[in-house]
Amino acid sequence: MSALTRLIRLAIGMAIKRRVRARGLHTAECVLLGRVPSRGGRRCQMTGFPQITAVCLLAFLATNSLGAETDGFQCQTITLPAKAMPARFVDLNRGGRCDLLAVDPVARQLLIYRQRASGFASVPDQTIALPPQTAWIAPYSVERRTNLDLLMSTATGLVYYRQTGGVFASAPRPLLHADPIYTDDDSPSLLPVLTNTAIPVISASQAWLFQRNEALARNAGLLGGGEVTSRGTANPQMEASAWTSGPPITLQASHASWSDSRNAWTLGLNSAHSLDIQQSFRAKPDEADGDKPENDTIAKRLADMKQAGPWNQPHTARVDLNHDGQVDFILWQVVPNSFRTEVYVFLRDAAGQLPERPTQVLHCRGVPIPIRSLGEATPIADLKSDGAYELVLLEPDVMIISMSSLVDLALSRGVDVALTIRSFRRGGFSHNAEASLPVTALLSWFGSRQWPLFLYGDFNGDGRPDLVLQRSSTQWEIFFSTTDGRWFQPQPAMTFEIPLPGYFARRYFEIADLNGDGRSDIVSQDLDDPRIFIFLTQPRHQKVNP
Image (cartoon, rainbow, N blue to C red; front, side, top):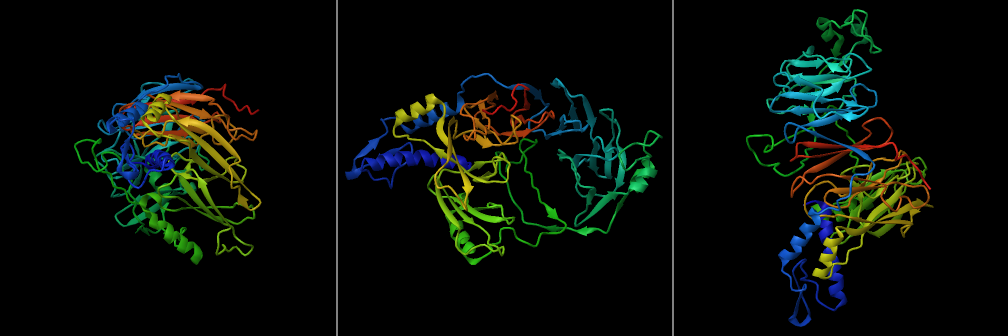
């Protein structure tokens, strides 16, 4: 169960308790969707409906849509050969348009879908058979700096497929001979573009960082500026000598972290039922602990807040709130059994020290949502991209007091919430919200692990994050940011619709500028659906602020 789901249940439960308390009833035994004990042993049941009726109504809320058409996007669908295939969008030609790479673990192939001015084709433009025991694949500028080649780690070392004229070679070239321990007979990992100048070759306990020697690269047929010599092709026998490594670095294991998902702990015969274990290493572990309390007051407060349980742990943020060139400290926590957030602000003094007592304490109604992220919620953000920070929270407006209220909720296909904003001025955040955007969103108890609303993506090209929210089980809306004091337009400027693959969805979004027009586009994929939905923003949605 996600943290947001628990908060939604809590909000509805609190709404029932408030109404029960107003009627003078005991609330210690109140149970959501059940019977509420009253004074004197009398019981009042929610309009006489059984619990299953309420659950069915909520399921109805989660599985019905408004049926509005997609507006403002060019929608394309790519159907991959199988579900849960590793896929990644990469600007292979470095011309501003991202292409799609997808790994077929059954056929042991890499599928390449090139993006044109009209978008993507429904079939791959090129298919590459993967070498045996390929562990990972990463786009990397092996030869030319102007485009990307495909670097792969195999059982015999590193090889690469050279790209020329928008097409990859049919056979790999050897780059480095090595004996890496990371080989794979199942599905290779598809890594993002390698931006480091060094290529790691990893053994059981050590890593060698290979870097290209520009002088040797010229002799091998490669110029440091990324141009191929007049001979036209590089010399494969000399390419390995153009890469040199320093002494090996001993790997030190860092702390482990786990991420669960449906079927994560189920072993089976195919990739849909598998167990993935990952462990990360750092060549030079950071000695400084970023979360180490700087004084006893913060240490004690953190210790007290951590007693709230695993689902309400405290969080921290470090930003320069008052523009004095020093990083200040913010401690915040969603209060257990309450739809509220506590925020503690510590501003550094002239000597760079944090105070023993908080500079400001706020007890705000509402909870944080992801900002400039698709999954990590935070209440502190720079919405204007001007270095000034705001306190952003989502406040519910839920009053479910009877089964008829649940019917109204189901028919409205959404929950009324408000996005509140407080600016930091004169040494503190305002205690009352200076702006509030009321919206209706589908806060379903079922389905996707994707947040139903977030501030991420710039769809009108103004440099600020826009609000994206789920209006129904299939329909999403986008509210543009504004500069007229309202922060966001009151009505959605764009909509898009995604078919619901099943009762339990494992959908995730990717938001990025895929075609180089300066505005965000959207990619949606569900791990139980072979289709990838691509939404390219259309030119008519340029920034127009009142």
